[in-house]
Image (tube, rainbow, N blue to C red; front, side, top):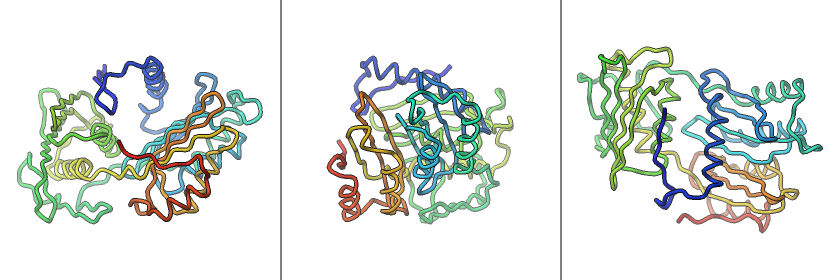
Length: 329
């Protein structure tokens, strides 16, 4: 059983019944798919929609290709959520038949959609044995030189961070214990759990304690095949990846919102604009209520950096007056 005490972005208790109900239904529907270690694409019937669930390797143009494929198969996208972590992407897209407005029940058609989407989204890379680790900003971590089991990782420049990570044996329970002390920030738990999942670890027990400014995370983990961490090198590798994840989170990008009549906007059209402008969609939330569509995108340039103002102006010019940049509160 997992128990989470959550608040909204402003630190207030969530009271809106509609939002609570949405969270409950979303978690219940997603559990069967995201517990699987093998599936990259699944289609399920869900509340009058066909729910398309995907996960795999993130790359520029991914959402564009997915929306193009769904449009090709006569699917109308009602709402969607896309989120990314490093090079990992997950998405949930609710679709209906373009002409009838009903969920898709033809098994042959569903199989074709699943096959085409499977060609687009690739499975996440499997765990690789640690030697030397280099991530996209060029920082190098030496994961061979440890002579202690519990060590603070520092990058090669010697700059010590406030983050402290220990990885130790929990022999009485046959787990590996990971403890993390760090500054608190948004999406910290998501980034940490996602990093463990990408490295093919399963979390069996865990706790997160949040203070005024800092956080203590504790996880009891094993490999997905049931093994515990057995070597110093692997401990060092795990520590380095987690520190990198916590201290160098992915840029969330520029936040854009589009609000208009649902008949006047298509996901494939918007993603085409982003693709042509050399933008990378790092996250998306798409919803349709009473024939009104609301799209929120988080975008960066192709290298993961902030989109320049000239490109932003061109994007807004092509999409129209309904597109505006959201300011951070």
